[in-house]
Image (spheres, one colour):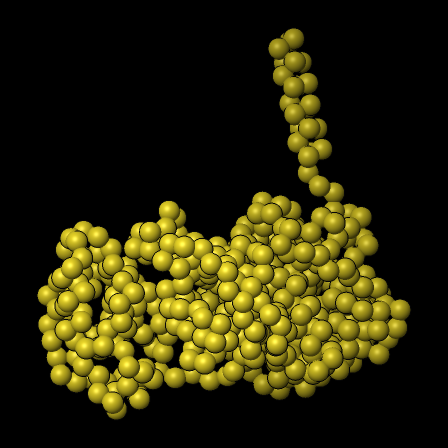
Length: 440
């Protein structure tokens, strides 16, 4: 009997201790819920939702619901672009049941943000927090209208930061396990201080319903866009004029790095800001304006938020040495280029490829200048095959040595040891990318 009593007391105390450790969201929700709104969109156009990464509002319906939140007492509201896309009429419902027909101030499709305005004054508003201060494993709370249910509250933890989900270069998402469903899109993600740290935007789901993974746009990126839309009606993004990729373990070895990190520059746009400042292909950006860069997808949002004409400072690793370079931020241009061709051929046995020389016409088609040879064919089980070099790639350099003609490939490869990794820079579909090739 004594053992049962002791066990009961032990589990009671343990349970009370566990409960004491859990946060209480009630006051935070009570204070901030007044600034969260329902967005009702009336449209005559049917939209399609992409597979796997599903937008959380019900985009398949002509009339759809989303969420939003008030960021100024004058009636400015943030929501997702995909919520109001092709809308004929936007109706905003406040927590006190008042309804307003909203005016669309501006949109930014690149990061999926729209700014609305309603004719009202002295409205409750949220406070923006700092996504940088969020910690993985920390608590976050969402308020929105899933499936049209007003003021629905869900909570969870931050699963990851800086997540790239393949929807563009200018957002590194906050991933959480907060339950987000159709109708939550555009709603706020709060930290425990009651500050908005993100805008709920996407869920990872083949069905369109929540499966434990949701994504929010960091609020600092959002507020930069909102400020521009309110003042200028359009968004101008900062531009560095480079293409980057992550440093793999194999590439880190080829660059004599102790561990893989940073943004590896695979292309410097001719006469772009980085080119004018002296950046080179093969430089690894490890810091930007005093903040560390661990992965390639962290750099574009930081550059994009800068004002055109500002001076930015980047810390780089170049051939094993750390350097600091300054550049004047340019304006992000629009446009793409990609195509392909072929010419005379040469077999490079050690690399496991057949390459062909590029003619003047080929260079114009591929948009390359004086360097590069075309990968005409790949030998199965060869070094290139195992590294996923593809037919149609253009080899621009190997271990930092520019490739001007087919024989350059053979000459450089022949001097490299067996079993080591070499960094091969290729151009594929208009983008440059370093690949670590282990030689046999």
